[in-house]
Length: 74
Image 1 (cartoon, helix red, strand yellow):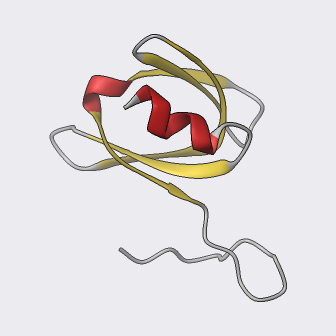
Image 2 (cartoon, one colour):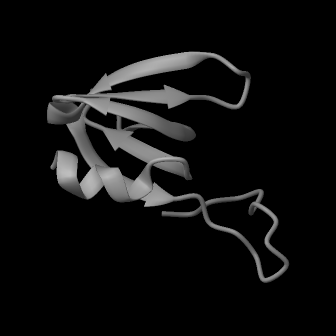
C-alpha cells in the first residue's frame, strides 16, 4: 500500500477512510512513514492518517481549465 501511495506525494487528493460514516479528508499528501501518511489540509494544518484505515485515494478532480471542481460526486 505504501508503494502505491507514493505516487500521490505532493498532489492534492481526496482520501476516504473507514469510519461509522464514510469520512473524506482532502489535502496534499506530504510524507509517508511506514503505515502513516501526513496530509496538509487547505487551512495549512496537518493530519496524520494510518493507512490501515484508508479505503480509497484519488487525485482531486479538476475541470478542463485546471481549476478544482466545486462539487465532487461519488
